[in-house]
Length: 198
Image (cartoon, rainbow, N blue to C red; front, side, top):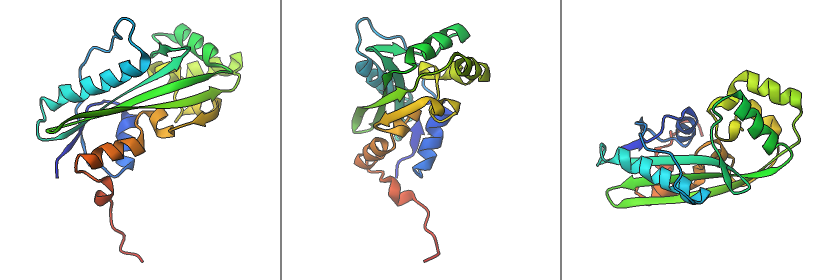
């Protein structure tokens, strides 16, 4: 069975892949993440996921290489990672009391080619107070997160409703990733441990 390589340095993606029962190697991809002029958010995340996987596949031609990218989208515009506390505050104020989309793409490259898909999840924030925005920024959590929040961390208390894939919001859609691996001849369930208890 082919080795699996994750083309991402994200600890959250590694945790989700481990949760699926996959043994894998981490090899972050070095790609330009600047959106193209006029590029739609869903097209952007899918392009990046594919570029990351293809870049690493060139070094691991016998492996199954997974690439992924996640963007928080509000009013059809991508909210990237905040560069400073002021930008994090602006993002959180814009998200407060509103719905936004989290778009996550996963791409799998193998000798038979590259397959990719995009998962869109609707996330609604409750109204946030100035005090909790300040406290959240002071925690440091928003600074390396798309859209300035992490649903799996302290920022999870801001979410009033989620429609779609929770794991995709964290960074890797479990169901869809397992499906891509199975199509490539790597059914994850065959790798699960066997309990001796009946």
